[in-house]
Image 1 (cartoon, each protein chain N blue to C red):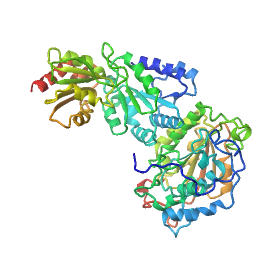
Image 2 (image 1 turned 60 degrees about the horizontal axis):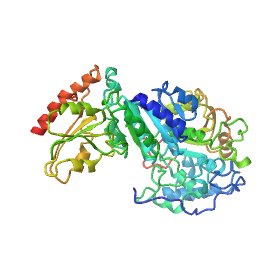
Image 3 (image 1 turned 90 degrees about the vertical axis):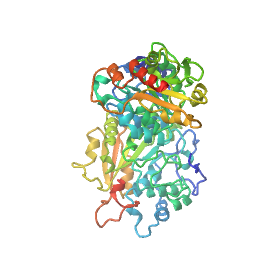
Image 4 (image 1 turned 180 degrees about the vertical axis):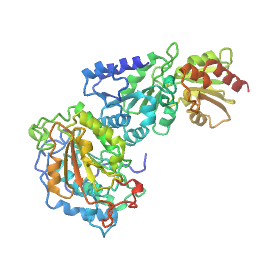
Length: 298
Length: 304
């Protein structure tokens, strides 16, 4: 996905003089050719993430479309006040593109993890959040985001699904696997889809996919769930419960059951691989299957 | 959306008299460069300030930023109430958003906002609060108040203006200060960015990200103004200007009350490097000094 982003962003810089890329050393080498062609619009500020967002806000205030890119813990967590004030409060937007969300960089340790990025953006905003599940989904989402001035977060995962899904850039929930009428609905976000499909093999559930959890497709969810006895499982690649409040609000007019799966809040103080962390957080197929089975039969 | 929606209003004062390029349409230029000083306008400020603060006791000079703001809007900035949306206007960013009475008074004196706004500071429907909001006040470029945001935003604005050809790398022909190309051949461009920070505000590390980068990139169209009233708790051993000069800025230290010296300093950029003006004003926390207008006078509110 990082390569897909590099290609798409380089193409945008070539084609659209309104776009500008702001880097804080991360990925600077990949964008060196673009920087040579567009020295005024490829800006590497060094390891200065507060400045990266401040500069993005300043660019936006002059009418440019800023694309800022770094590791999620530095792009979002570290620069949170700049996101809140230099973008949101000024009434301007930017496209923030992260890598290293959650524990994609597990071997680097907790300092390089960001399970809370989407939850943080929920406290600002409103932000459109894209979490593509396949490299082919990245380019169209980035190009669409570059075409307007709203605030967009594009969260690129190191791993993904075997094939692209989703409804283009509409953000709508797409049914990938249909259970019987009124079956529980499992919503898989971005790269969680393949593990989710593995996990629910043989279970009577509907599986829906989105790569755009913000704005969450509440209308689509209401149409998918059983009217009398809605049962929803969220499977998200970031902090567990990040989208619970939206599902709760969407179904506030009727009794419903919701289970939110995702990355736990605890700092495990462990390295290992992303697959190890999947297992520790119950997000591998076996862990998901256990959680979903207990919930839908319980 | 707030109930109140600000919109540019009819100026209660005539726009400032200038002898520059007023023949150019405001959509393509931001006004003339380096206005001649006005003799009488400054006298309008005390009553305007009193309307904001209700303070009859202290002289306007109690506001550390008043003189530098006046000189900027009266002589330096290519911006007027008619050109607040001109793409190539000069940008002034009040990074230190605290104690904005002097800012509001100058904006009113120059016709950006109606005087009547000054009578309801921070009221429920007032566009003027204890920290300015760009979405509420015509002519205000950034909402500020949390310290250490203006320089980063200003650097980004300058880079955005450069990328669009609205400013250009000065070549020495620009040494008169902000003359740009507008006044010469009707050329669009020549915008400069001015950011005012407080000496205590420089405590925030985010400033130093911007100072180092601006110096490295030789952002020649950027001027930082530090109003220095000795309010930084740990001071700046070796002088605060050294934090800029070591990063490749030109620096000037002047009496923050001296309009001629401020004018010289604010037009003293060399066209190659970013420029710093340190405007020295009386120490804020000296026992005998009147306080700047604040909500409490306490540094714990982050006044800088």
